[in-house]
Image (cartoon, rainbow, N blue to C red; front, side):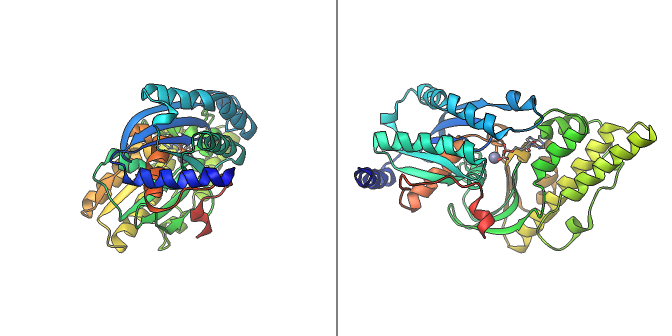
Length: 357
Ligand code: KG4
Ligand code: ZN
């Protein structure tokens, strides 16, 4: 039975490559967003649908994996239906299905992967598993229709902070990564220590707007060094110590100053290292990706640094910065153009392929 499916999928994958403007359905469920999207010809967003679980997890101060899986299970069918309805299309109109299969919360990934497999099996459509990190990178293709590899990319999300050399649509070299916390994770943990709600990144950014970023020097020797790796846990601990010490002494701290100084230290590290990586590799474009790419201070800082060195700076539209399925469908398109589709034995994996490098 399954072999019959795969034969059909191989044939339809071939048809996908030959079509002028093929349609691909993208599905995303790696963390706390249930999302689906329809993309035409790789880069044209026909429709999107997202159900965010943020209000549920906010009650607990962070993502509760079991609750995330349950919510994905409840919502997945409706979200896929919504994306197809908004496109005025049905599954019969699709030419392929892309799904995030790594990295992320394993139970959450399992929901999207199982759903996508079911749809693929029922329709005979080719199934393409997409690495979420490469999806974040592809969000830039949706924003810049003419952007093509090679370029350098700084990926900063809740789970990852990587400098990635994008050699082609499907070939990547890991240049640097965090040794401890991801940038978004550090934002979330510091925000939590300051009593801000989940997800802390956007809240901390808001607070930082009224603060003095020069007030506290939170830079670490590691991030000033030659390596392209990052370390954010030292900066996080320094903030927690400032808050603690003030509390013990009964002193008031200006929380906006703390937030601004923390943000400055993280933005400095991400910007300096990624621009240096682009220059050293002789690449004329640097792209930003991942949830933290929504941070205005980071966008502005990278834009300035890139301008200084004559590098073109790309960053996704705000709506494609955090988790969404349009970016997954876009990367899925490029995968299917270069390799055979996945079999129905496709398994989710908690780690990114970049962590294997
Ligand atoms: O990419 P994403 O939606 O999910 C993962 O793949 O992890 O990233 C979510 C992360 C969270 O840590 C969130 O706090 C952070 O991105 N984030 C921000 C901002 N918006 C989202 N961090 C700093 N400033 C923001 N404006
Ligand atoms: Zn993400």
